[in-house]
Image 1 (cartoon, rainbow, N blue to C red):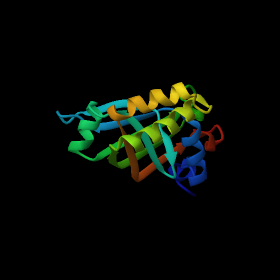
Image 2 (cartoon, rainbow, N blue to C red; image 1 turned 90 degrees about the vertical axis):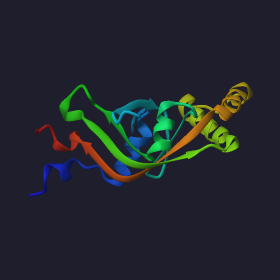
Image 3 (cartoon, rainbow, N blue to C red; image 1 turned 135 degrees about the vertical axis):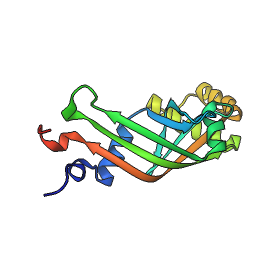
Length: 155
């Protein structure tokens, strides 16, 4: 009989679908005092890798500069145990600082969250922010996922 853990693990296509459906990841880095620093981020998926942008002077960026590891988590169905779904990705993180590439990514990110092509004004706004921002590339070294709907109502 398979373990309950293996019974609820998402397949790669299920994981990709889940990552594409969700809108916010929680990023955990280690703060300067060694405690977890948790922050929500918008993201874009590239295979199993997740990309997000943030201000270059943010605490999470300083934390990644000191220790290039982070854990990200996404979850859904929190109101009912049998609907719980989520993924935890332990990641190596790299920082993209080139303003042109950061701006290009910012437009991809905004297009995902607005659901439309960006107006000229919105594009200009993204490009204006790009020099102050960076892209964080979260490349998983370990992925744990769960989908309690696979239990069929049994806990």
